[in-house]
Length: 446
Image: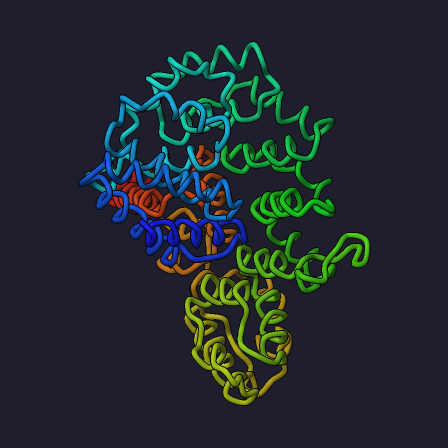
């Protein structure tokens, strides 16, 4: 019970801080599932003890209350599934985040690609769908197609409810009502509504709406600014790189729109450069990496994983000596240039970190993009997720999910904070679909 509580707290902290790789998330998710399955061997006694822990935490005002509520909700879902007790209705209102996550985790499916949502419809019959936003979100995330008529009715009666449009998108429905909501929200809506509107655009793959995010590239609100940059980097990667390099970066702890106007938070700056992968951006990033003191940060590791395919150990060590760090980085970049067939000048192994000093034809090289050390063209970009996906942090992983929607121009509405098994299952399906497409006979004229 205590192990499950601590695992839940670590997971909540990780997702709240927008950090942690998919590999790290999988460890904590597995621990939580194992603990709840163990508690389900004696559910009545476990429930009694959990209720006592909840009462103690509430009386003492401890931070563990959230984790205990989550575990109790998870236990009752795992054991009773469709017959959830009446106290669960109160939890949906009083502790919506904990109840939502419990419903997303449990009941644990027997296989990676299985989904169990038979407990949602009985809840909807007890709680009106329109009055509980958590249920609307769950209908979309768990693909409860039986609730589709209810969602469409709500959309027509309350077109301003953003959660309904996102739920419909996750069910594969994106209509003119949703487009009207997005345009109105970005033009006149409050910040939280604008965030959900940009999420809808990014998940939908509707490229003709991407330009609506450009006025928000300099937004003082971090979630809004991040989504706007994701859309811009997908829609116009060359322009996004040029603008990001021109604006420069400020450490996240020091960044504010007032004290650093016209500059980007450092994590966002690295994320833009990583997703775009242009060689000009790579050289500017490597110049910073080679000159900095100390080991690489999480956003910098994301950049190295996605762009070059690996993180040299010399860049992570403490103490981080300058000479081994620069030598390891230079060797890796030279290797990737050769793999991408970028012609190099003779003095590239000692040249300064500029494309003009490295490439024989800098103008042509400037348009090339790298993904895991290989050229990123239209054909490669349409393939499955990179093999380093489990090593990437939550924000960049989400951008790759957005990229999938952009490339296919169809909804890909999975969240990077989702249960790890669901993310792995989605990635596996993408790989399988792309492999099947690759084996189909070509219909092109010969």
